[in-house]
Length: 241
Length: 241
Image 1 (tube, helix red, strand yellow):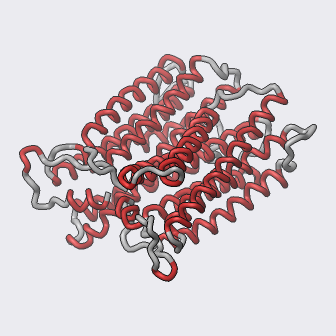
Image 2 (cartoon, chains in turn red, yellow):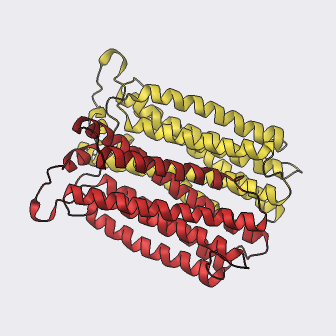
Image 3 (cartoon, chains in turn yellow, blue):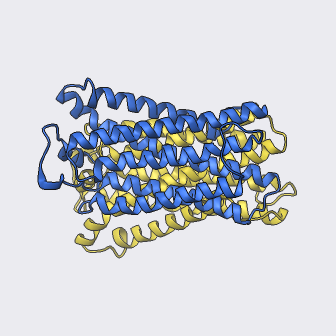
């Protein structure tokens, strides 16, 4: 499935705009409405608040930038590959810290862990994300597979990455709904400003994910100056996508 | 994004198996655990129980069959097109009844409507599904656009359909989590059999959706006997996908 005649770069600009809006909304929610962020605190809610902030800004937003960078940046292949893997590493590390914040909050309050669909899918997403990163590193970066192995792996790497990313966005949406349902069961107004804010953050997150995936279906940007790297198979990537 | 060398038909068999499992699980949940199904009843819960059953079996399972039928059935294009649009119409009608059941339950119990992310996305999904069906009917079936318009519309029809279907599966997942969270807030065991059943139904639903989308990315089946219809552009569809 490819969008012919559409370049990834302008689509990625829409995604960047949505990323800024989503990041601002999640910070406003957790700092202004939920009381702030802390790794150690008497008020254990502040530890939990790190979870949505790190998952959204880390795994979803920086993870999305990692995906888009490969397709939209007008650079040579080796540079794009390095940016792609470094951004995904940052996304993964922030995601792991975000998950630890949720466990830390639950454990310090004596809450049950890992009973909800959100938590089950969250563990699946972070595990698949880590495996995909290691696989990508070994096959495409160091030591790197043969040209034939890389060529054959690329469509599957791209397909698996798209699947994991859509699952991550879905899991984030489950998280917004779960947290808001808890708050509403404890008396938060169903149509109040915080409920609207959280639902809008979820919708902006889904729209961001949609534009990230649209970028991967669009045509890639040629390197500035028109040079093609030695290790460049953008063209096969474009054909595959 | 296409999976080269993989035929849609065997992938669709996995999807059919998952569909049967998901349908059995949602019926066991709502009939054995939640007390049964009814459009009119003193016990208003029975009205609500129609909602997950109709949304899953209608919009998700039959909707997925509609998507796969176009790619996996070894028939001529006009026959596949008719099956595709009839199955989507059935999915849409069952989905609308399923949404009405949720509203009917809320209204008869005096519960608030349309405050949750699940409900917001649900309204978006059913509206987009309806628009997509009407657009497909007018452009590809009756009266039908010119060959050029159909050719240009097809990749967008396919892209929009994929997006709406993924959003539908995500919205279903939100529904499972929302309902289970309500039940758990009212005392249902967090690790009990019903919680495990609902989470497993959600995971089977997501796996079914994944195999439906994988079918659309695979090679289509040639018509039995090798005939190619007058109105056949399977080849351009395959190239696009």
